[in-house]
Image 1 (tube, helix red, strand yellow):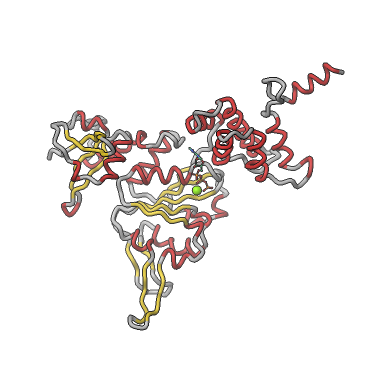
Image 2: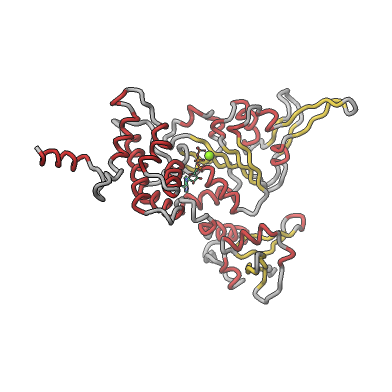
Length: 388
Ligand SMILES: Nc1ncnc2c1ncn2[C@@H]1O[C@H](COP(=O)(O)OP(=O)(O)OP(=O)(O)O)[C@@H](O)[C@H]1O
Ligand SMILES: [Mg+2]
C-alpha cells in the first residue's frame, strides 16, 4: 500500500502539511504533531494501526523526497517491513535530539531503540548531568501519549500510584484510581518516572510487578487475590536515578528493581563539551568566561574522581549553567562561585576543607584586575622569587 507522506510548511503561526503532489492534510493531523515534525525537520507518514485507527508517524525527510526509497538499504538482510521501519527510525533518530541536549549519538540511539523496543529504561548518573532532560527529550521525540510522575516528591506512594478509597454517604465506599493507573492502561503510553532512586521503598514494591516483563500488572491491594490492573500493550517506562556512574547504585536501590531495567548511563561532560553547551546557551556572554566555568567544573570532577582527591563531588552541569546565567546578568566568576558553588562544599577542616580547596581553584580563574592574565600558582611563586 502506498502511504501518504507529508512535509510541514510554516505559514504565519500555522504548520501546514502537504504531500508531494500538493494535497493538503493539515486538518487530519494534530497541531502538536505537525509542530514537532516541523521543528525536527521530519516528514509524517500516514499509517494504519491495529483496529484500523490511522495515525501519523515521524519519518526522515528522505521518505518524503522519494517516497519509495528506503533510508537504509536493508535489502540484503531479510527483515520484515515493520522491522525495516524500525531500523530507519532508530538510525535516523539523532536529528530528533534537541541541539541543547549534549548526548553522544550512540547513547541517544540506544535510548530511542530501547523505547521503541518497549524496554524499561533507567537513566543513571550523578546530580545535574541531564538525566531528566534526556528522558523528557526522548518522550517528546516519540509521538505517543506521555505521562510524567516525580516519584522523588511523592509522600504517599500508595495514593499516587494506586489511588484512594473514599467514603460518600450516598455512594458508600468507592475507589478513585490514580493518574498512574490511567497511564498504564493507555496503549503505547510513555511513562516517565522521575527520581525513582529517591522514591519511597513502598513505591518500589508497588512497581515490582508493573515492571516485570512476565507480570506487567498493578495490584490494587496488598491482599492476595485482590484486583489487578494490566499494563496496556506498548507501554514504555523511563525512570531516572540520581546515582553515580559507578555501580554503587544497587546499595541505594533494590537490586531486584534495578534488574527490571536496561541502564542508560548519562555521560558527564568534559570541559570542551561543557564549554560548547555554555556557548550555545549563552551566546552573549564572553566565551573566555564560559571557558573558565567549564574548566572549573571539569577540574572539580577530575579531582573528585581521583583517589587522593580533596573533594567528594564535582560541580554539576546544572551548576555550570547557573553560573553562566549569572555571568549573563553581569556577575563576576568569583561572585557566581560564591553563591552557587561554595555552599555545596563543606567548611569542616578549615584550611584542609573542601571549601578551601574549591576557593583556591576558583581564584586561579579570577582576573587580578591589573592585567588580563589569570592567577596561576606557578606564576605567583615565580613572581615572589623574582622579587626576593
Ligand atoms: N547533558 C546535558 N546537556 C545539556 N544540558 C544539560 C546537560 N546536563 C545538564 N544540563 C543542564 O543542567 C540542567 C539540569 O539537568 P537535569 O535536570 O536533566 O539533571 P538531572 O540529571 O536530572 O539531575 P538530578 O539528578 O538532580 O535530577 C538542565 O536544565 C540543563 O540546563
Ligand atoms: Mg532529574
